[in-house]
Length: 243
Picture 1: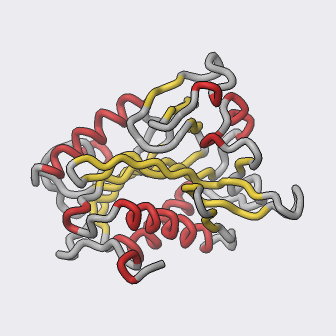
Picture 2: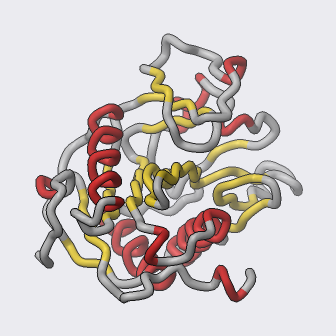
Picture 3: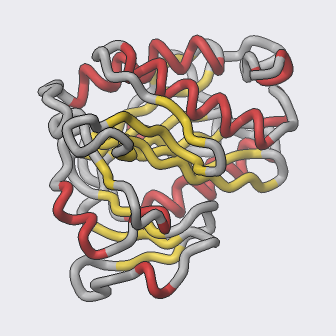
């Protein structure tokens, strides 16, 4: 990683609002809240925010999605999304993290931003002795699966972001203990020759709050300080105060 990509902390050190949803959030509801927050950030009327949540079972199609990769359109609702990437699954047991970060206050380099997202996830996985890594030409985080074959690898985290007016939204999805059979309705991320996995599938039985703690600690290593805010205040357009 180049020196330019080693950190994505804010130049002014201002903390990022950190919110955890207390219920499942529908896809369109989440998308509307993200856009509202991102617009407010771009106009200087809201703090940056990270929003952790779970969705009900659904498929989302990124801007590069191929129709042939949707294998069962009737299995779950399908949502077109403005994020980068192809088809992915969201559902209970998967930690979705949406990031509304102002790249004007950090580093106006989307490639470095994505690199730091990947390294952030890899660092969080290391808290649980899971060795994640990246694969050239493939966005996301992978793990080796020697139990499936010498060259086998599975994806444990998908990344798909959108940047508008230098403010990001959408983000990452990390498989903690979802029903992996739900991926059967799509070709995940357009990759047919490898699989998907989760903490549970790898034998790591951890709770979502434990994963959240690791994500937050490691996020601060790469992106700077955070401050807790209550979920109902997340979609507001006013600057928040520490909880």
